[in-house]
Length: 286
Image (cartoon, rainbow, N blue to C red; front, side, top):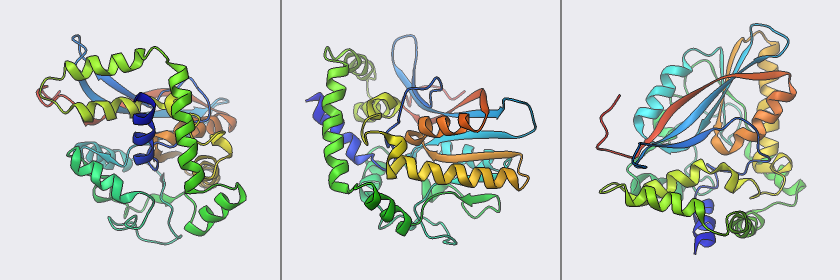
């Protein structure tokens, strides 16, 4: 059942947790537990990079999920004020004003909203203020996305079967189910907390489990083509004089995005962790 559960979870979170191309040192998601293995929170990373050869530029990769605690998005809104340019993902036409309805007809948006209500979380487009002057669209348009998928012979049908195949590869990676035991231990220790929410948090944190969903993610439309556009916009903003730039994309984009940032001659210097989901409602806030 494990492999089919992973397939189902992956399909629901396809827009949020697209595949990573290869394992790189930086991590972008983790579940924090206490001394009794009780899950405390799902945390997402902000990893900062600077030029290897020196300079004033700084680029932050900000991994995100599309449903999270409202307090997480409030923290991001505050942090976003400090950037000269904040590059964001959304398959939309250039010039479109981003609102809570911007993805109402988007891929699996209904599933995202279903998960939002089931897990008592908030929706990214409801909470992030995209009207700020420093926000810069850094994604494909719908027409460009369709063309990119067609050029690669990709479709929703092919994505579905790649997810199914990836679930079997995940099983072969951990045939004894050791990671599943870790998850179930945390669920059992959760007491009255939501076991499904904790299981979902572990799936999000397991980026390696999604690394082959689209084969070579660097060449896929869902990850590679969109990341390529983001890096092109990053280069444009840096050339225009921006010194502090953030790239706010789904956490599943970040390993391929990091590879591309490293190719620009940037190196990681700092990782900041931000609570995205509170998993232990009995824990006292810090």
